[in-house]
Each structure stands twice: as structure tokens, then as C-alpha cells.
Image (cartoon, rainbow, N blue to C red; front, top):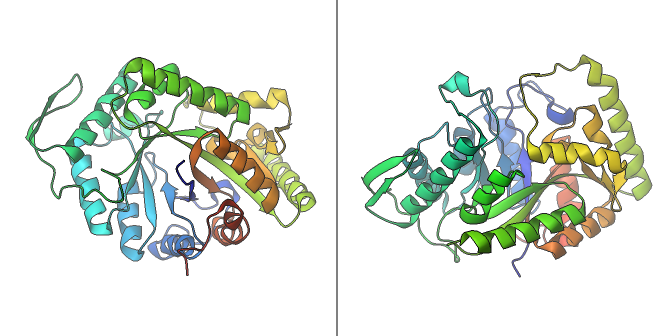
Length: 361
């Protein structure tokens, strides 16, 4: 069984205060972001997810800067097929992987974005995921083959060889390709082309069902790559005791509720299938399984902030081990304020999961 890996999340935001972070004037400066990355190295984390969307700093540029400031930190770089051409991206990622000593990971994002702002367009969901599948397939070919000629519906290259070549490292042929999405179209892409399927914080039974479905779909569609791996992106709300964790979590949700009426809403945005699955959990109760808290989603929590695992380090570790028992081997955790929580959870939570400061000094 693959040893679970634990990554964090570094906010890549122009505006301060993401998800209640105790922001400062320099919250997105290189100095501040590097402080986060260095703290992750010190406290035993493998790396961190860097999010992407138009209106945020360029994710690949941020990842490159952080890789240059660190020695072990592995950026999980979120990118969009409509923002990059496959050969350009394959070359950029291969270069950074070479310069960083094999530390690049990639998260392909196909959800809605402000496409018109950078001249992209998409006709419908089928076309969006068709393009994504082709993008992932071509990038992998460019990383693993030379003199590639490819003619698809969305992308074409002729006699293309990416340099520097990706160097295999510890059984890894190329940077791992992560992918999310809960729609049928997204799952078909993941089952055939992704290395890691990322889930948001659903209850255990929901994750079990999705893992079983994706494995069956991989077999049905004739997956050509090593078996699909699975990851969980979730907020982990850890305190010294169970009682303190729940008191603080409820107070934080009350603060979200109080602020809800003052927060602007982007009515142009549609709700993705995976996000809707999280929002629908509220009808089943505020607490599912032992400690999966659904109330944050009622008051503006989105994505990984929609559901929280709440409790002492022992409580949260027990819950994460149950996800691992289902087959989750990649965990992307976070809570705010981000920097203090890197240390708290790195010190209190990771050692209970067989991770922590073994490489952190």
C-alpha cells in the first residue's frame, strides 16, 4: 500500500483574509509565501497546493519562486487547459521539475473561470472535458516520448520533443497529474488520464462509493496507465481538546454567519457538481460520521471550506486514517490562519499519521 502523503494549501490570492486568514499588508509577498513554504518543510509537510483562477497571481510563477527558495517543498501547481497550450505547459513543467530536482506536481482544473478575460471559450461540458482529456493525454506523451506527432480535436503537435527530458525518480516517470470533478464527464477523464483523483470532504460512505465507481470505470474504459490513486482536499480544524475544537468551530461558523450579509456574491458563477454534493450534505445533518462538520457551507464556505473535520489531533487523525483505509493516499489539508496552523497541525497531527518532522529538521 502506498504511504499516505500530506500536503497543505498556500493561499495564492490578491486580496487578504482568505477564509479568515489573519492577513497582513504583505500577505502575498514572496517573503510571506516563502515563509509558509519553509514552515511546511520544517514541520514535515510534503508540499502545498497552489490554487488558480483569473484574477489571482499566476500560479506557475509563484510555484517557481517558492521552489527556488526551498529544498524539499513540492508545489502542487493548479493549471487550466484553456490558459496553457499543452506543449508550452509540458516544457515549462519539465524545466521546473529539472531545476527543482523532481519536485513538481500538477493539478488540472476544468471548472468554470472568467474565460473571456484571457480569450478562452467553451461550448459545453462535453467539450470542456474533451479538451481536458486531450490536454492531459498530450502532456503525458510529451513528458514520456520524443518526436511526438499528435492530431486531436483540440490540439496538434508535429515532431515535438520537450527538453529537458523528465528524469524518472523513485519510480515516478513524470510529475503526478491530479484531477478533480464529480460529474460523469469529469470521472471519465479521471478514470483514464489522471494519476490522482482529488475528492472534497464528503462522508466516508460517499468517498467509498466514488472510489469503487472510478475503479470500475477505469477497467471499463481500458485505462492504459498505472492504477488511479485517490486524494482528499479538506479543512482540518484541530485544537488541544475535542470540546475546545467544537467550541471554536461553532464560534467561527457564527462569525461566518454574521458576515454573510456583507459579503459580495458572484451571481455569474455556477455551482459545480462536486460543490453541490457538499452543499447537499447539510440536509443530512450538521455533523456526519463522527466529526465532519457541514455547517460552514451554509454561510459562504466553498470548496475545501465547505466541510471541516473538527476535533482534537487524535480525533482528526482517526478520521483521516479511516479515509486512508478506503484507499486515500494523498491528503491536502488546511485551516486558517494558515501559517500558525502549519506548525500546529505539523506538530500535533502529522506524527499521529506516521508523518511529521522525519525530514523536517
